[in-house]
Image (cartoon, rainbow, N blue to C red):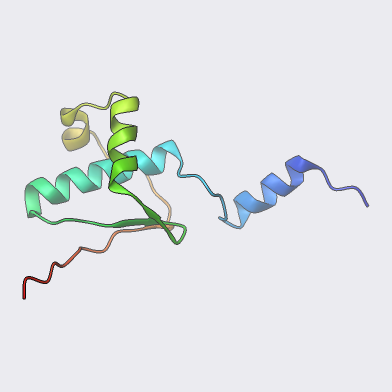
Length: 94
């Protein structure tokens, strides 16, 4: 039985096992991070498909895609899948 590369990619996508963070997901993450920081003064950690998204990667994507501050704050958020998790980070000052 011969299985094609495309068939593997399709199955991996259907099972939500992709390795990379999609542009739409990264845009949502950048918007959520900015809004939570400005409006609620919360630091947030993001996980996509059980993998941590580093803050540097978010910053780099915003610069590379030339996403403005206004776009992050006022543009409607794109639809996201359940694969993005964003708990609030609690810092221990004791």
